[in-house]
Length: 163
Ligand SMILES: CC(C)(COP(=O)(O)OP(=O)(O)OC[C@H]1O[C@@H](n2cnc3c(N)ncnc32)[C@H](O)[C@@H]1OP(=O)(O)O)[C@@H](O)C(=O)NCCC(=O)NCCS
Image (tube, rainbow, N blue to C red; front, side, top):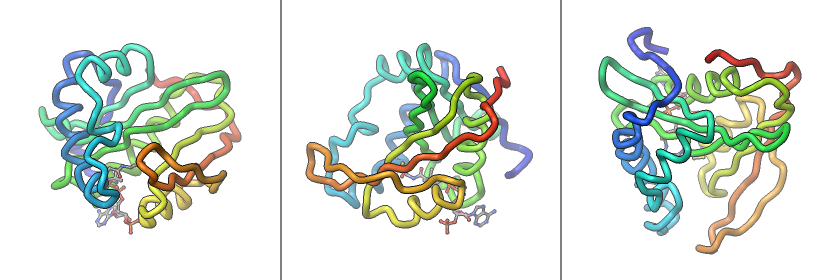
């Protein structure tokens, strides 16, 4: 990844820019699935602030510009990974992979599995998660009728905290 990009925990002041980047990134997914009200687009500022307070939320910064984000919600020994988003003009430079890897390291100790889901038509995204060690764990259908593919990654060594 470009050394000019810094990854760190999100703070409340990041919420507005994070939401802007998330919306910009997920528009392509909304168009793919014909679902403009998908949760990453429907989410409001209060929900992002709540996530920053309650979950492990990481942001990627290029200089002062927020260019990506990801979050992990801890539930027992499982971390639910979600909202992986990179600003459209910053994609295909390794930021998404770097955010995913940094999230694993930032999760608290005791996590034994990471879970996430993505749209069943998003073949490139599914393949990318598989290359990152995730395996398919089933499918479901959301309220919009979109098939979701669920993936899980067993964490051999307990994830450690980096701040
Ligand atoms: C999914 C998403 C976060 C990936 O972000 P990204 O920063 O583009 O991810 P990466 O750069 O790590 O990897 C993307 C591709 O770029 C390639 N890549 C990485 N570094 C590269 C470089 N320096 N030069 C050229 N290509 C590169 C990767 O090999 C990968 O290729 P692939 O698509 O053939 O697998 C981004 O596309 C996005 O925000 N999408 C919309 C929201 C979304 O779908 N989120 C996930 C839902 S679960």
